[in-house]
Amino acid sequence: MDGGSQVRADAIITWLREYGDKRVNSFLMDERRSIPPYIVLDFGNHGVLGLQAPKEAGGANLTNRDALRVLIQLAAIDTTLSSFVGVHNALGLRPVLRYGNEVMRNSVLPQLASGRELASFAFTEPGAGSNPRAISATATPDSTGGWKLNGSKKWIGTAAWANYLAVFAHVLDKQGGNRGITAFLVRQGVAGLRQGAEELTMGMRGMIQNTVHLEGVRVGPEDVLGKIGEGMVVAQDIMKFGRLCICAAGIGSMKRCVQLMVRYAAHRPISTGNLIDNIISRDRLTDLTRRIAALDCLVNAFSGWLDEGLEVPEEFYALAKIVGPESLGIAVDHLIQMLGGRGYIETNIAPQLYRDARLLRIFEGPTETMLMFLGSRLASQSQPLTTFLRAYARGSTVVARLAEAAEIVKQRHVSGG
Image 1 (cartoon, rainbow, N blue to C red):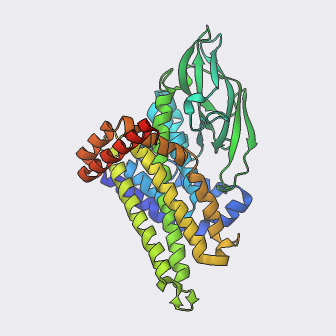
Image 2 (image 1 turned 180 degrees about the vertical axis):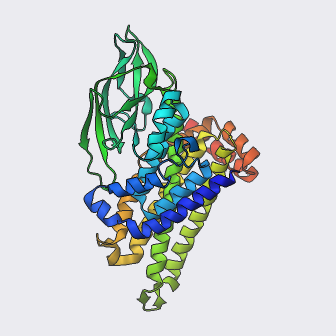
Image 3 (image 1 turned 90 degrees about the vertical axis):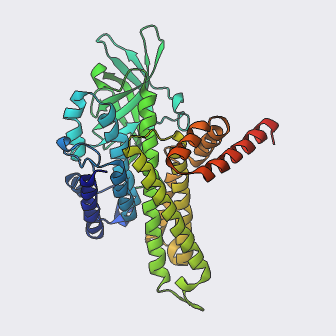
């Protein structure tokens, strides 16, 4: 374990707690639909925008476990800020860090790690959400040995703010044959890159999401992330880690919900005493506390496996993406219910938490898609997961129950029941 990483993460977390109390106004960010520039600059100066970038690039060089601890704390302060930082670190900086060439790493990483420039991830299209291979953007060869990008990307977080975008497109050869989806790093301001309309979202209103139009954007071999035709390898790696970050954000936001519930219930008198002593209140707080503890254990173990260099089965990422946001959905609903009429007032923080939390169940793979994937893998390819559980999760009982559930799924599928 990197003890230095833990110390650096602790310092960032301590700073965030003080900073959140003094400098973050979630209500105004939501009303103005913008994160104040000073927050972006301050985050960059304190390592928050370079969580896993190497020290030589000016980053905090945190382990996966410590980076996720920071995201949990940040989500407990503000869900939108946690998403913004997650997008920049996991979806923007990570492709350059893991798949960029030496020139990118030397020139781009220091700017991203310091927050002087931002990065985003342009994959989703109007016809390609849960089915990523359905993207239609193309990269057609030009006369200089490069390609021209054409297509549109939609619902791209921080796209209009980002200085760099990881863009994915089908590379075509001169005969029109498809060489496979490929990732490119595109600089803001190049000819043919046009920022489209902003989506006026229900929640996460402080962070811009907008359409990006690619109209003959020229890219060359020096702009490729990874290898030609292996863009899905890049995308799946980035999106998997993004799902784990979403689970972390869910944990932090749940902790905020419980904090607000306890604070209110401890001082709210009802006919039988204080609200916190009511059996229903205690039951709900107990349930949420158990969920938080379980999710903390999941993310802690998960990130530890990654730090050890283990190849964690894809099912774990889907599981994290399901249970984190879905548990948060329960938490924000209980928060508003406990606050009663006060929880329904827009100037209270609860409605904003409710709106912000709702997105986590949708993006980077909606719950239904993740459930379908899990069920399919358990029914047809459960061996990698069960082997991993036996070896690293001390899960003999869990493995037995999974095998039983998988058999039931298979029988129902075959019989049509």
